[in-house]
Length: 410
Image (tube, rainbow, N blue to C red):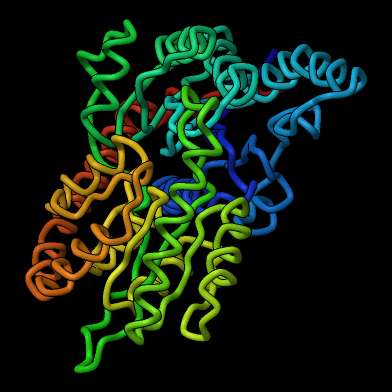
């Protein structure tokens, strides 16, 4: 006869981690830090985009998200198209086998329910749908935790996203418009809560107080081509963004300001290099920031930050450095509003160096006031992340967790 004995919780984390995006990896790190502190006996592993990187960096077993290694490369040859199609079928069984080994799977933060950047329905939206569907079939609780969402124009992507969200056992959002976007897509969000981006849970250095002379400026750049619905205008949008940002950086260098160019994804590095080459000044350098911890150190040492990528903004705001957003989506505007910085948003699609300089100079004039306000706002946001983790534990692991920890032993 099989005896019943208590077994540790098996918790998986799922997402595009280890694939070169520091924001995604920061969200993973925040959840792993919490789980290791709150559930030290839990067995943790990941299904992700870069399993080798995740296993090495975070010390957990990791499984590749997709069977086909070229999943996120455009397939043009017939053999590649056939392999990608086969991979979609294989991934059904791979995902199901991985999910059923777990008591719960957490999708931590990031914009998993949005298409503010180019995205195909058969890419990550399909993978997320498989996760949520197999979780429902096998009784594994899938939690979408402080995720970002947005209006989706592409019908197949919208359908997959809607069904994924409905099938999840737990949902919360990082800002109010994410919840509203899912409500508008037909998801019942009445019991879904809004908290804050998980990266605000990470430890951070304090921002340096500016010295007498003007100090360095961090400019976070991005391989920005518009949203999923703007593919026809992608190159035009990119050229305007690159030209405006380059002229802004050149103006700072001509004033004698040191500029550190920041990235948030491997795709951004050529953009940073192109701007540095175009300006051609020794005052403009590219930071080798490989993680959000590195980005926080860079932004903490700056007098001011001007940034595009969402998690570049989060890093700068978290350390309390006056920040101006080159905003490419509503999530950036919402973040800046939450931190009391709505006046310092500039549209990335219409990057105007002259207007950007005006806003930047106004930001620097109010630097001391802004720094004091950010200290207060960070305390509020940190409390909300703590509330998120408390709510997540109550939803996934009720009582002392024994209900989920009991398994049959042979």
